[in-house]
Length: 241
Image (cartoon, rainbow, N blue to C red; front, side, top):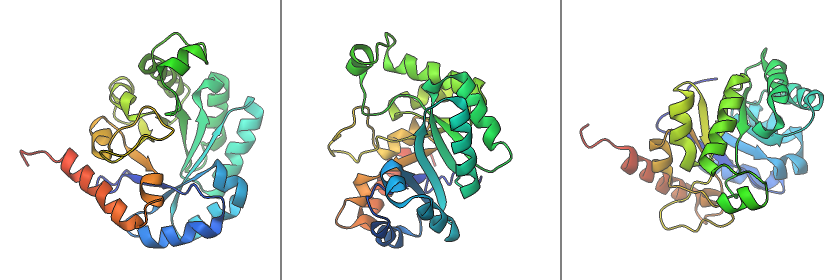
């Protein structure tokens, strides 16, 4: 898999209930975007066909299924996803080391990279303790799962921008960090808790930003994308350059 493009380290989330709605957005944003997230909603609605069509058009695919099951079941799903040629595939770090290691073995002869989901960006400190029964703070819990994933051989993690700098410090420069929860300055967080602006997320150590509604639900997606890229340029620019 090619290295992140520092100018366009973006993955656009195609969160639609129908594949027919996907292509107008892709046509508006290509180029510069060539990396797309296919999540549960679209994959359940359209199946593997939408992935195959994207790959046929030489697009990169982040298949965000968040696999979490017994190792044997996850192995089968990983092999099937790798056969589709997906570039990135998610599974939950909380599935445990045996599940993670089995998944790594399942894709090792392919180009597919695995990302372990740490803590969903819709969850905050209160839910972590009261609902999940986890006594660690969000940062410490994310770091625990990131270390677990790295030890199991997983290629990287999905975490919120709030934890990205800590994960980068602990897991090193070659560990992929993908961050959802990206919002432009002044935008509502909606159903997410731990959010950040695009440029700041990159400054904190993210390799890729997953951006959905900010761009795809805008009346003019290409204009919204321009705002995202402007925020990245203004936030990450080094005044000494």
